[in-house]
Each structure stands twice: as C-alpha cells, then as structure tokens.
Image (tube, rainbow, N blue to C red):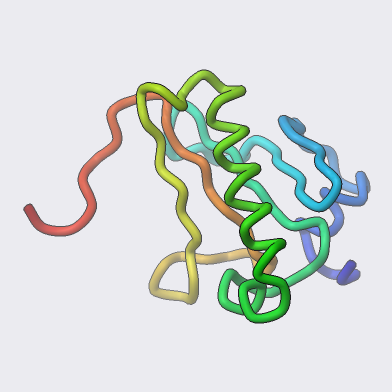
Length: 116
C-alpha cells in the first residue's frame, strides 16, 4: 500500500466505496463519476503505478485484473450485450489516479473508438 494513493486507501477500507468484487488479489468498485450506465473500476490490491508497470512486475496479476473485469461484467448483467475494458495510461489518456486500474464500461450502446 502506498500511503498517499486514493485506490490503496479504498482497498484498505479507509475511504468508502461501493464494492462489487473483493477477490484474493483484486478489488472492484463503482466509479464515482460514471462514463456509462455501468462503470466499475477493477484494481490489483497491490500498488502498481500503471498497466505497463503491473505487466512487468506481475503478469499473472494483470491477467487476474482482466479476469475480474470479465467476472464483474457477468455479475453486472452486461456480459452478453457487450462491454468495454479500458486501461488509461498517461496524461493524454486522462489518467488521474496512479494505481493501475481497469475500467469496465457497459450497460448501454457505447460510442465507437477512432475514425470510421
């Protein structure tokens, strides 16, 4: 745990969150500023700054985060209709919390990525 990390504090229970998954190595909670009808964040319980750092340090934990994202989608009832899994990396992607986290988005028709 990193003392000044918002997500570490949420995982530790020091900051309240609406928890939707609490696994052995992963934790998921509702985003407080949802960008879709369903918007859940899945984080590793260990602190890793971002997706690339997590992949380099513990590839299995990265796989566990993605697996937890799929489990959240199923539990939220969006697995069959479709959902998006997103890691934001760096300033241009809009990342604001420096703890690796996977966005699970769905529950509605999502916009297209890139140019058509």
